[in-house]
Amino acid sequence: MTEWSETNTALQTFAALREEPNWLTEKRFAFVDKWSELPVPTIEKVNFHRWALTDLEIDATYGEEFVNAQQYQYAQGDNGKIVQYGKETMLEQLPQELIEQGVIFTDLFTAVTEYPELVEPYFMTKAVKPEENNLTGYHAAYLNSGIFLYVPKNVEVKVPLEAIFIQNSHVKEALNKHVLIVADTNSSVSYVEKFETEGTLSNSANIVVEVITKPGARVKFSAVDYLGENTAAYINRRGYLEKDSSIEWAIGVMNNGNVICDFDSDLYGDGSNSLIKAVAVSTGRQIQGLDTRVTNYGKHSVGHILQHGVILDRSTLTFNGIGHIIKGAKGADAQQESRVLMLSESARGDANPILLIDENEVTAGHAASVGRVDEEEMFYLLSRGIPKEEAERLVIRGFLGTVIAAIPVKEIREGLIDVIDKKLRNDR
Image: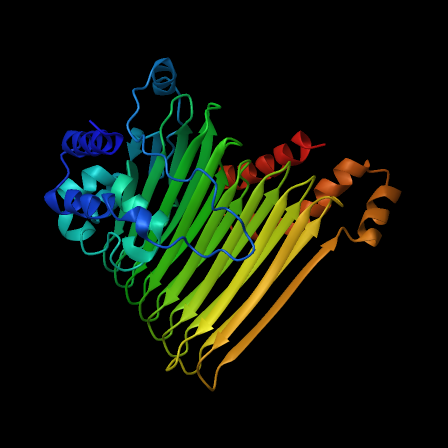
């Protein structure tokens, strides 16, 4: 039996054990044979083609580390929360009031079985499509975990919903996570997710997030990514926005391994609005590349990008900001700002603004810079008796503050600050 046929059999077993509906299994196997033939995604100025981003092991047998994880005391609180360890769901809760209003916040494999009419129309059909590139095709074939969030029409979720995803790198197993969020007409929700790694084995991570906003819907999306140094990751977060809807993104890219990110918003609806705030810290010898794009299809749609990054040691950080106004999107507004702060002469930073304008009567602009810590700021702090390392941390926090302040959950916000401090301390 060949390696490929063994992989096929293992995938078939995985799908059967989770009682997948036929439509999902058929979508998997439609890409098993052809994902590797699809084009590689384009991330300008980032050489990632030799990274191990497509592990085929997706269903390892867990050992003692999983038993220990079951004993964790996950603070429950009053909000909705999901905790997943590897591919397994450890905690799932939702306030009764939201359940009665029809809100669904659950494991993806539960959702495809119990709510197929809500999942199938949106799963990799609008925001992210499997045929886009070899990594989205691989994801469609080999996804092994995820969650689904649905907010019904006219429902306002007033308390942030949280998802905590822990990569189990005590075993050889790819983290192929899919997050699908559907905000129905005139609904609103705030959602926060955090990724982290336990264990030291080398694994790949392939994370796809789809956010669908129906007319008038409003989503605030926050994320903190803190994957391990032995994890090579592809992270694709995409918004599909209909008329007068909005998504506010606040993303902290704090990983310790090599990562490429696709953060995109497609403004299909007239009057739709997307603001993407992303911050990143690169340390050691790691490479992080962020491709952040907003495409204006709708009239009077507004897409803004704000990216701030810090690089230390021999690391590399690349920001590609792309604003594209499509023909017919009159009155559209596309703005972007990318700034990189360098704290090492050996580091490499790039900020690449791109504007593609195919329509008249629009507004567009960009700003980009790569530079060092302001000497006057440092002099002021040092003159007040603050040690140099602490002064640098204060400058960095201020530089990244716009995203930190946008995260709605205090514990996650404070956690992001802790993660930033850890990365800075570990690389002194």
